[in-house]
Image (cartoon, rainbow, N blue to C red; front, side, top):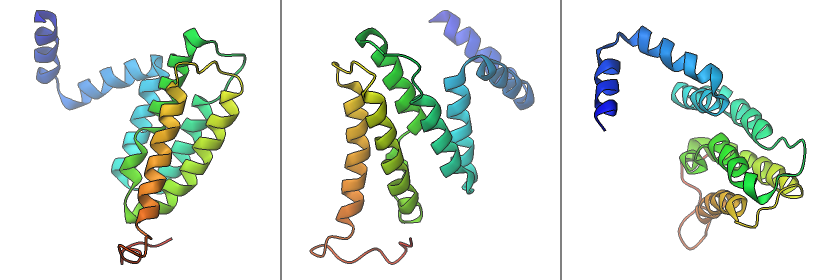
Length: 155
């Protein structure tokens, strides 16, 4: 605990550019952190790169060279989960079309990956369920009992 306080105090005292340098140095050695930073950067910029960045992250996270046994399945699922980085954040009228596209893509890639994974723990299934739940929520927007599509929704 004391080490965490010491490290925290050190980081707080740094100039922003020095802190950025440390984070980028660590990210160069940790692909998951680097990919997470790219997704967060594209999300905060609100630019058109987010869809492309997420597609690439999904590709990297679902790339399999050999069978993934049950001991490694959790690590694989963790990479996939981090690559998709909360699809619920895309559950907005402005990004709904991107959510549908990414959900279809992520679920297809996950389905292909599952052919080479012992997911007996169900971790990949839970991640896929997250995507399905987001699409279900999106579909409820169109439910005629509730109302028509939100006025701001555009595809």
